Length: 503
Image 1 (tube, rainbow, N blue to C red):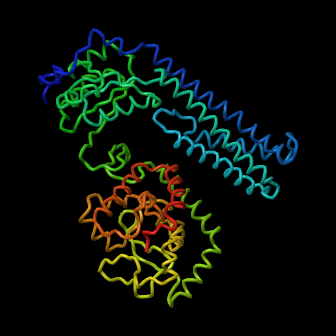
Image 2 (cartoon, rainbow, N blue to C red; image 1 turned 45 degrees about the horizontal axis):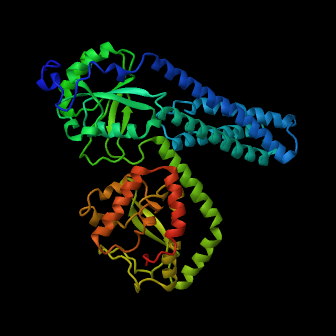
Image 3 (spheres, rainbow, N blue to C red; image 1 turned 90 degrees about the horizontal axis):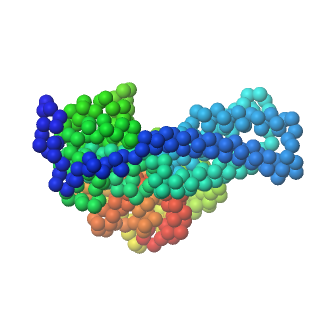
């Protein structure tokens, strides 16, 4: 293997890279920065714990005053109060409620809080049943305490984040990072951090390697600190003045990367690899570990198991409420289908779901029996389609024919929000014509979706219409969050119901 620094590209920086050995000290920071960051993190965690410690009992007392007119609970209510507090302590300690926020968004943090707080009341409920005191539990007080306590803790986190963002925007409490190499992924990350100082990380500069983008990017690139061969000397001169080393190189640089890591192994600084996946057609790339073997996920749906759990909880809650609240509507529509034409109330069609596996999707029947047969010919419903009954046309226009799919959601084959499932014949046809068409199946199909609320539903007479749908579906998978799902559900009520493009 070639010795590190022997290649001329490693000994010399690019023409655009100004070697800054004389001025680099002003970039490296001060040794006390690390200590200040530790103190800032400790102060943040303390403020968060104190905020929760105040909010939880205060919300309990206010809820008690609301229902009982007194702040002093009776002995049995004191037992309930203590049991819930103990449950909260256990759930908050087990969950990552108080772990560092750096790199973690507010939505994720609030979901973790919701799960931990719900776990607290769930654990108490289990205890109440176990000791046979469930009948004595003041339900209204507990429910009000749950909601008010949750809102209070959300408020604490929002206020602390606002303050933290202000501090980081002023350059405080930031982790300082050195870049090794500058491929497209490293440059993208630098831009992200520069545009979002609240993430709490700052790229001090980079050390150039062959194949870097700096010569073509100019002002977009971070400041160049020297050639790759200068890295060990720089790290030796500035120990403790930066927090992490990020390597932005490609698999083709494996030899240089190994030599570089060998040269800097005496420096106990965390080293992270930024994989350059440009042109790979990635979808939600992420890092996984099986045993002690790390892997990079190149294409996947919701990468984090916490996100998958959150989406499943969301599906069960929304679908369960919909089935209960819409039960009378289900009955009326079932009668209407039976009266419109002979045949079953529900129509089952094979569709591709998560992972491309087939499942039976439920709909209220809108066509005459045998009109929606299993022919290999792809025939979408069109305007004034003779196969559609008069009542079926109403169901399609109002999207009420989709309501039985809430049972698909409860069964786990669908989600409330996701890419709409197409007929198996359509999938077999379009997967050969549209790039990344089957990427839609990295998540469960949905009753409504990102494409549908943008008007892309019903007949697709042109290939470009289906391509646009697929683009929106993939964009949804990349951008998924609970708030996006809520937004789509709300938009569905205004934009999809009654839309004229469904026949």
